[in-house]
Image (cartoon, rainbow, N blue to C red; front, top):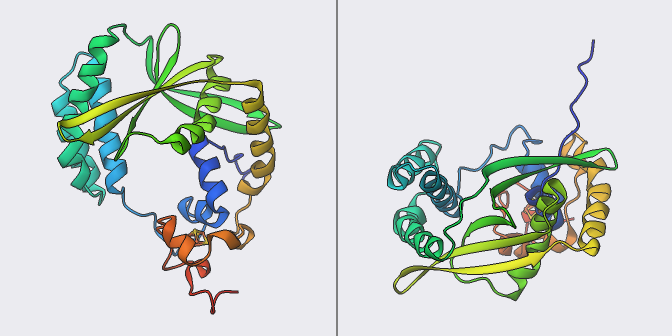
Amino acid sequence: MAMERKTVHLSASALNDLLICERRYAFSHGLDPSVSKPAPNKYLVLGQAVHTAIRFDYDGKNPYTAIEETIAEQVAEGGDPELALLHAENMYQAFRLWKKEHPEKPVSQESEVSFEIGGYPVVGFVDAMFPLLGRDWKTSTKAWDFKKQQDSWLQRTVYGVGTGMLEWEFVVFYPDKNGASYGVYPGTVTDRDVVRLKAMVRAFGPLVQKTVIDEFPIRPTSMNWLCKAAWCPYFTVCPGGEPLEEAV
Ligand code: SF4
């Protein structure tokens, strides 16, 4: 008897990936068995180390142990520790400065939220819920520009629909000449955001249930140099990564 396939869920990062290039999403979700998942890149390793340090801090555990162990775990998986070794401790110190101004404790940390839109499941992973708002920790190479702030609507909306909390802050840690600093980017989930999220889930929900990689389009706008510009890790194995004159 054929096994029933579980409905594939969407998340803010999956939706962002799909917006950049559907084929890239398919590669990263293992739909081409000949292409292995790339090892954690230097940004991911840094992010993991800082997130774990913050969680340990609130849990009353040693954040430096968290940084050390997270880097070691990620390296064991082939991850690139370059940025984490340079910046994770400084970013944790920047978090400590931020925390001095915001001594209230989170009511929960690293909780998963889930809901459905049009029968398609959506999940989100919330960094920290406080009594009056939710917060997401970010690591970055610099302070967020206007575009980054605009782009955060999707993640905020997934969190907002999942938790019912409309007020969110993205607290962004980035290196500076003194080690590291932080920026706080608040935002409110609006009805318009929810409509946009619903439209995206309904658009991509049926696509992500597919199991054949060729059914995931190569975006014409993502081809060739734009694939490189998007830092696509599948550039060398994807037909979209061929030189323009060879690509179809
Ligand atoms: S190389 Fe280009 S077309 Fe292919 S998956 Fe990456 S972004 Fe998409």
